[in-house]
Image (cartoon, rainbow, N blue to C red; front, side):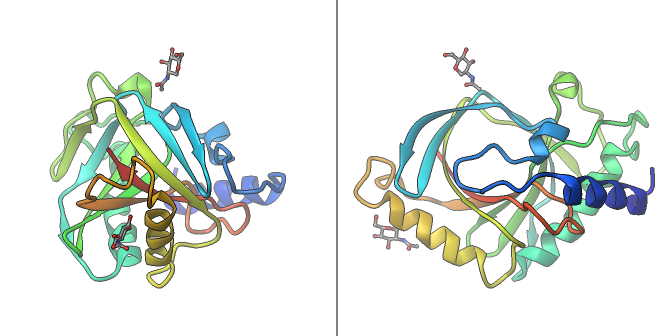
Length: 199
Ligand SMILES: *[C@@H]1O[C@H](CO)[C@@H](O)[C@H](O)[C@H]1NC(C)=O
Ligand SMILES: *[C@@H]1O[C@H](CO)[C@@H](O)[C@H](O)[C@H]1NC(C)=O
C-alpha cells in the first residue's frame, strides 16, 4: 500500500467517523489501530493518571531539531517504511498508534511508534531503528484536539505541569515529556493528541 493510499483510507474513515469529544476518551483511532492498553488509576482536574503494562516501541535515533513537527514528520516516515516491510525480515506490520515524540534536554527528539502485541516478542531489526521496552509505568496525560503545531504543544505541556502542581505527581522532576499523536497528517476531524509525563 502506498503512503498516498494509506492517507486516503485514513482520511475517508475519519471523515465518516462520528464526532467525539476529546476529554478522557480513548482516541477513536484506537478502534481501527491497535494502541497500548492502559488502566486509568486516577482522574484529576484536567489530567488523568494511567498505568501502562510494559508497551513496546520502535524508535528512531535522537535528532536535534527546534521544530517538533518537522522532526516528527521526518522520523515517522522511517517508522512508516519499517512497518511496510522495509526491515531486515521484509516483514509487514499492521499500522498501530500512537506516534510519540519524546522531547528531552530542550530539543533532543526521539520519535517512536507503538508495536502491536503480535510483534512485540520479535520485532524485525532494521538500520537506524531501536526497540524500546518500557517497564510497567505510570503516565500523567493531558488530551487536546486539533493539529499539533510548534506553537501550541508547549502551552499544553505547561498546562499539564500546572494541573499536577500540589499533587503527588508534581514532586517528580520531569527530564522531558512526550507528545502522542493518534492521527495521520491528512485527518482533519476528531484529532486526538496527548502530552505525557512518564513516571
Ligand atoms: C488493568 O487492570 C486489570 C485488573 O486489575 C489487569 O488485569 C490488567 O492487566 C491491567 N492492564 C494494564 C494495561 O495495566
Ligand atoms: C511545573 O510546576 C511546578 C509546580 O508544581 C513549578 O515549580 C515549575 O516551575 C513548573 N515547570 C514548568 C516548566 O512550567
